[in-house]
Length: 268
Image (cartoon, rainbow, N blue to C red; front, side, top):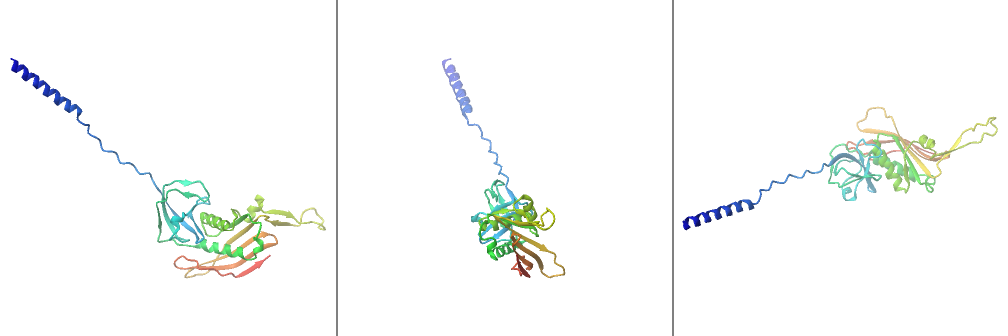
Protein backbone atom coordinates (compact mmCIF):
# COMPACT_ATOMS: atom_id res chain seq x y z
CA UNK A 1 0.00 0.00 0.00
CA UNK A 2 2.87 2.36 0.87
CA UNK A 3 4.50 1.66 -2.48
CA UNK A 4 1.29 2.48 -4.29
CA UNK A 5 0.84 5.72 -2.35
CA UNK A 6 4.46 6.67 -3.11
CA UNK A 7 3.92 5.95 -6.80
CA UNK A 8 0.82 8.19 -6.89
CA UNK A 9 2.72 10.97 -5.13
CA UNK A 10 5.57 10.84 -7.63
CA UNK A 11 3.11 10.81 -10.53
CA UNK A 12 1.34 13.95 -9.22
CA UNK A 13 4.69 15.75 -8.83
CA UNK A 14 5.65 14.95 -12.44
CA UNK A 15 2.29 16.24 -13.67
CA UNK A 16 2.67 19.49 -11.69
CA UNK A 17 6.19 20.08 -13.07
CA UNK A 18 4.97 19.51 -16.64
CA UNK A 19 2.14 21.96 -16.10
CA UNK A 20 4.53 24.58 -14.69
CA UNK A 21 6.90 24.18 -17.63
CA UNK A 22 4.04 24.67 -20.08
CA UNK A 23 2.90 27.85 -18.27
CA UNK A 24 6.42 29.32 -18.28
CA UNK A 25 6.99 28.71 -21.99
CA UNK A 26 7.64 32.00 -23.84
CA UNK A 27 4.78 33.32 -25.91
CA UNK A 28 5.28 33.37 -29.67
CA UNK A 29 6.20 36.91 -30.95
CA UNK A 30 4.23 38.25 -33.86
CA UNK A 31 6.30 39.64 -36.75
CA UNK A 32 6.64 43.44 -36.71
CA UNK A 33 4.60 45.31 -39.28
CA UNK A 34 6.80 47.04 -41.85
CA UNK A 35 7.20 50.80 -41.24
CA UNK A 36 5.56 52.77 -44.02
CA UNK A 37 7.90 55.31 -45.63
CA UNK A 38 6.75 58.89 -45.65
CA UNK A 39 5.62 60.05 -49.10
CA UNK A 40 8.13 62.15 -51.02
CA UNK A 41 7.47 65.03 -53.37
CA UNK A 42 8.72 65.03 -56.95
CA UNK A 43 8.46 67.96 -59.35
CA UNK A 44 10.14 69.38 -62.45
CA UNK A 45 12.01 72.70 -62.25
CA UNK A 46 13.93 74.94 -64.61
CA UNK A 47 17.44 75.88 -63.46
CA UNK A 48 17.71 79.69 -63.77
CA UNK A 49 20.98 81.56 -63.40
CA UNK A 50 24.66 81.24 -64.14
CA UNK A 51 28.00 80.75 -62.39
CA UNK A 52 27.13 83.58 -59.97
CA UNK A 53 24.18 81.64 -58.58
CA UNK A 54 21.16 79.53 -59.48
CA UNK A 55 17.51 79.29 -58.58
CA UNK A 56 14.94 76.58 -59.27
CA UNK A 57 11.78 77.79 -61.00
CA UNK A 58 8.91 75.32 -60.89
CA UNK A 59 7.91 74.39 -64.41
CA UNK A 60 4.91 76.55 -65.41
CA UNK A 61 4.74 77.71 -61.80
CA UNK A 62 3.70 81.03 -60.27
CA UNK A 63 5.85 83.91 -59.05
CA UNK A 64 6.04 82.41 -55.56
CA UNK A 65 7.35 79.05 -56.78
CA UNK A 66 11.06 79.77 -56.96
CA UNK A 67 13.54 77.97 -54.72
CA UNK A 68 17.21 78.10 -53.84
CA UNK A 69 19.47 75.41 -55.27
CA UNK A 70 21.75 74.34 -52.37
CA UNK A 71 25.46 74.66 -53.09
CA UNK A 72 26.08 70.97 -52.48
CA UNK A 73 23.65 70.21 -55.32
CA UNK A 74 24.54 73.07 -57.67
CA UNK A 75 27.73 71.55 -59.06
CA UNK A 76 27.28 70.07 -62.50
CA UNK A 77 24.09 71.93 -63.39
CA UNK A 78 23.70 74.91 -65.69
CA UNK A 79 21.05 77.50 -66.37
CA UNK A 80 18.35 76.37 -68.79
CA UNK A 81 18.23 72.72 -67.76
CA UNK A 82 15.07 70.94 -66.71
CA UNK A 83 15.60 68.84 -63.59
CA UNK A 84 13.42 66.48 -61.59
CA UNK A 85 13.79 67.05 -57.85
CA UNK A 86 12.86 64.56 -55.15
CA UNK A 87 12.57 65.86 -51.58
CA UNK A 88 10.62 65.42 -48.38
CA UNK A 89 7.71 67.57 -49.56
CA UNK A 90 8.32 70.23 -46.91
CA UNK A 91 9.26 73.79 -47.88
CA UNK A 92 10.84 76.41 -45.63
CA UNK A 93 8.77 79.58 -45.76
CA UNK A 94 11.41 81.95 -47.06
CA UNK A 95 11.63 83.79 -50.38
CA UNK A 96 12.92 82.15 -52.43
CA UNK A 97 11.74 78.99 -50.72
CA UNK A 98 13.91 76.08 -49.58
CA UNK A 99 13.07 72.48 -50.39
CA UNK A 100 13.68 70.41 -47.26
CA UNK A 101 15.76 67.21 -47.40
CA UNK A 102 16.51 66.92 -51.12
CA UNK A 103 17.44 63.31 -51.88
CA UNK A 104 17.87 63.47 -55.66
CA UNK A 105 18.13 65.94 -58.51
CA UNK A 106 17.96 64.24 -61.87
CA UNK A 107 18.85 66.13 -65.04
CA UNK A 108 16.30 65.52 -67.78
CA UNK A 109 17.49 64.87 -71.31
CA UNK A 110 14.91 67.15 -72.93
CA UNK A 111 13.60 70.70 -72.74
CA UNK A 112 16.87 72.64 -72.39
CA UNK A 113 16.22 76.37 -72.96
CA UNK A 114 18.40 79.10 -71.44
CA UNK A 115 16.26 82.07 -72.53
CA UNK A 116 16.28 83.22 -68.90
CA UNK A 117 20.09 83.35 -69.10
CA UNK A 118 19.92 85.44 -72.27
CA UNK A 119 17.64 87.97 -70.60
CA UNK A 120 19.86 88.09 -67.51
CA UNK A 121 22.70 89.05 -69.86
CA UNK A 122 20.58 91.77 -71.49
CA UNK A 123 19.66 93.22 -68.09
CA UNK A 124 23.30 93.26 -67.00
CA UNK A 125 24.30 95.00 -70.25
CA UNK A 126 21.63 97.63 -69.67
CA UNK A 127 22.91 98.14 -66.13
CA UNK A 128 26.40 98.85 -67.42
CA UNK A 129 25.52 101.46 -70.07
CA UNK A 130 24.95 105.05 -68.92
CA UNK A 131 25.57 103.96 -65.32
CA UNK A 132 24.69 107.39 -64.02
CA UNK A 133 21.04 106.30 -64.16
CA UNK A 134 21.56 103.52 -61.65
CA UNK A 135 24.93 104.23 -60.05
CA UNK A 136 23.54 105.55 -56.77
CA UNK A 137 20.34 105.66 -54.77
CA UNK A 138 18.86 102.50 -56.23
CA UNK A 139 17.25 100.51 -53.42
CA UNK A 140 14.63 98.90 -55.65
CA UNK A 141 14.86 97.32 -59.09
CA UNK A 142 11.72 96.76 -61.10
CA UNK A 143 11.93 94.11 -63.82
CA UNK A 144 8.98 93.74 -66.19
CA UNK A 145 9.22 90.55 -68.23
CA UNK A 146 5.47 90.11 -68.61
CA UNK A 147 5.72 90.42 -72.40
CA UNK A 148 8.29 87.66 -72.82
CA UNK A 149 7.81 83.93 -73.32
CA UNK A 150 9.32 83.08 -69.94
CA UNK A 151 6.99 81.38 -67.47
CA UNK A 152 5.85 83.38 -64.45
CA UNK A 153 8.22 81.48 -62.14
CA UNK A 154 11.16 82.04 -64.51
CA UNK A 155 10.39 85.76 -64.66
CA UNK A 156 10.36 85.93 -60.87
CA UNK A 157 13.66 84.06 -60.66
CA UNK A 158 15.37 86.37 -63.18
CA UNK A 159 14.09 89.47 -61.35
CA UNK A 160 15.23 88.19 -57.97
CA UNK A 161 18.69 87.22 -59.19
CA UNK A 162 19.26 90.47 -61.09
CA UNK A 163 18.14 92.77 -58.27
CA UNK A 164 20.06 90.80 -55.66
CA UNK A 165 23.31 91.02 -57.60
CA UNK A 166 23.09 94.80 -57.37
CA UNK A 167 22.15 94.97 -53.70
CA UNK A 168 18.57 95.97 -54.41
CA UNK A 169 15.12 94.55 -53.74
CA UNK A 170 13.15 93.24 -56.71
CA UNK A 171 9.80 94.95 -57.34
CA UNK A 172 7.24 93.35 -59.64
CA UNK A 173 4.94 95.23 -61.95
CA UNK A 174 4.75 97.12 -65.20
CA UNK A 175 5.70 100.79 -65.40
CA UNK A 176 2.02 101.78 -65.33
CA UNK A 177 1.38 99.58 -62.27
CA UNK A 178 4.29 101.18 -60.42
CA UNK A 179 2.89 104.63 -61.23
CA UNK A 180 -0.55 103.59 -59.96
CA UNK A 181 0.98 102.20 -56.74
CA UNK A 182 2.94 105.39 -56.17
CA UNK A 183 6.39 103.80 -56.44
CA UNK A 184 7.03 106.04 -59.44
CA UNK A 185 6.17 109.63 -58.60
CA UNK A 186 4.52 112.13 -60.92
CA UNK A 187 4.91 115.92 -60.71
CA UNK A 188 2.60 118.13 -62.78
CA UNK A 189 4.30 120.39 -65.27
CA UNK A 190 3.56 124.10 -65.11
CA UNK A 191 0.51 125.29 -67.01
CA UNK A 192 1.66 128.93 -67.05
CA UNK A 193 0.45 130.69 -70.19
CA UNK A 194 -1.80 127.84 -71.24
CA UNK A 195 -4.98 129.64 -70.16
CA UNK A 196 -6.07 126.74 -67.95
CA UNK A 197 -5.32 125.43 -64.50
CA UNK A 198 -4.82 121.92 -65.83
CA UNK A 199 -1.17 120.79 -66.02
CA UNK A 200 0.30 120.43 -69.48
CA UNK A 201 1.77 117.07 -68.52
CA UNK A 202 3.67 115.22 -65.81
CA UNK A 203 7.30 114.58 -65.01
CA UNK A 204 7.74 110.99 -63.81
CA UNK A 205 10.66 109.74 -61.74
CA UNK A 206 11.61 106.89 -59.41
CA UNK A 207 13.61 108.48 -56.67
CA UNK A 208 15.08 105.30 -55.15
CA UNK A 209 14.58 102.76 -57.93
CA UNK A 210 15.23 101.88 -61.55
CA UNK A 211 12.85 100.06 -63.85
CA UNK A 212 13.89 97.53 -66.52
CA UNK A 213 11.69 96.16 -69.29
CA UNK A 214 12.16 93.48 -71.96
CA UNK A 215 9.40 93.18 -74.54
CA UNK A 216 9.38 90.48 -77.20
CA UNK A 217 8.24 91.38 -80.71
CA UNK A 218 6.64 89.19 -83.38
CA UNK A 219 8.94 87.55 -85.92
CA UNK A 220 7.58 86.75 -89.36
CA UNK A 221 8.93 84.32 -91.92
CA UNK A 222 10.17 80.73 -91.90
CA UNK A 223 13.47 79.82 -90.23
CA UNK A 224 15.40 76.61 -89.72
CA UNK A 225 16.35 77.75 -86.20
CA UNK A 226 14.14 79.61 -83.74
CA UNK A 227 14.71 83.41 -83.78
CA UNK A 228 13.53 85.96 -81.26
CA UNK A 229 13.21 89.74 -81.43
CA UNK A 230 12.83 92.16 -78.53
CA UNK A 231 13.28 95.68 -77.20
CA UNK A 232 14.88 96.40 -73.82
CA UNK A 233 14.91 99.54 -71.68
CA UNK A 234 16.01 100.88 -68.33
CA UNK A 235 14.18 103.87 -66.94
CA UNK A 236 14.85 106.22 -64.01
CA UNK A 237 12.85 109.30 -65.00
CA UNK A 238 11.17 111.08 -67.88
CA UNK A 239 14.58 112.52 -68.77
CA UNK A 240 16.67 109.50 -67.80
CA UNK A 241 16.35 106.28 -69.79
CA UNK A 242 18.37 104.02 -72.07
CA UNK A 243 16.95 101.85 -74.85
CA UNK A 244 18.10 98.79 -76.84
CA UNK A 245 15.90 98.56 -79.94
CA UNK A 246 15.27 95.79 -82.47
CA UNK A 247 17.43 93.21 -80.70
CA UNK A 248 17.61 89.73 -82.21
CA UNK A 249 18.90 86.33 -81.17
CA UNK A 250 18.71 82.79 -82.53
CA UNK A 251 18.30 79.57 -80.56
CA UNK A 252 20.50 76.66 -81.55
CA UNK A 253 19.20 73.14 -82.16
CA UNK A 254 20.41 72.30 -78.61
CA UNK A 255 18.25 75.01 -77.04
CA UNK A 256 21.07 77.50 -76.43
CA UNK A 257 20.83 81.24 -77.00
CA UNK A 258 24.40 82.16 -77.82
CA UNK A 259 24.06 85.93 -77.69
CA UNK A 260 22.12 88.80 -79.22
CA UNK A 261 22.51 91.73 -81.58
CA UNK A 262 21.31 95.28 -80.87
CA UNK A 263 19.65 97.02 -83.82
CA UNK A 264 19.74 100.53 -82.32
CA UNK A 265 20.45 102.38 -79.08
CA UNK A 266 18.76 105.49 -77.75
CA UNK A 267 19.23 107.65 -74.67
CA UNK A 268 17.05 110.31 -73.07
